[in-house]
Length: 285
Image (cartoon, rainbow, N blue to C red):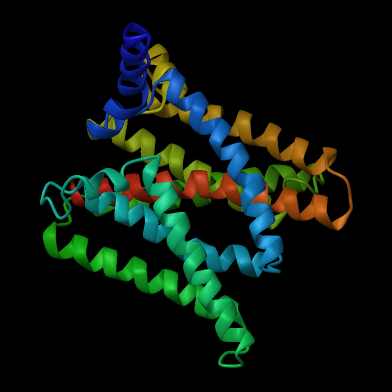
């Protein structure tokens, strides 16, 4: 029995705890695990938003973006060599733990915003909710700029420019072929943030000496010898995913809400690493 316990403990340490303690990135086991957990969480979030009577509209998506920026910049604070946070609290700021922390804070701010609206103190909870996220993001950014120096100011310009430019080219092609799916603003936003993520990976790996932590991208970068492979990889994956989402879901309200929630999660999964990577490289962390 002790032998089995020791093996289980060794497995958990090797594939889950050690990568968090050492910020070593991902392996096949924890990648699969976090993917399953994410799938479960999506349905949990869907039920929570139903309970809060929150509709997943473009306004709601826009109001949640500041929290993505705040969470990503918080992760950069943990990366900072200035040692702003220390163990064990710093372990909460390493992926995937930070997702749960940011989620809890975001839900708390959403609940407060909704309560303020119901109390008649504000007319609409969306601006207040976004305001909480923006304030948090600016505090994080101020802390980073206080402790760190800007060493590569061109990085955010490149990431934004490449992301927007490539998405615009894609839009022109989709418009030419009269594709309603790939000229949809939300779908284009998803593609844009993932092109930004690909751009941040490219400039970091190929030009600034960073390395990719995710299993599949790291394998493909090693195979091809360049992070440029992230562009076709992202396009192939998310064109396929968006096509399936927009053609296979039912037209009833609940199915449509679930579809938009899934798209929101996909958008966050692109914007979050793109923001973190860009801020890190800009500050030379």
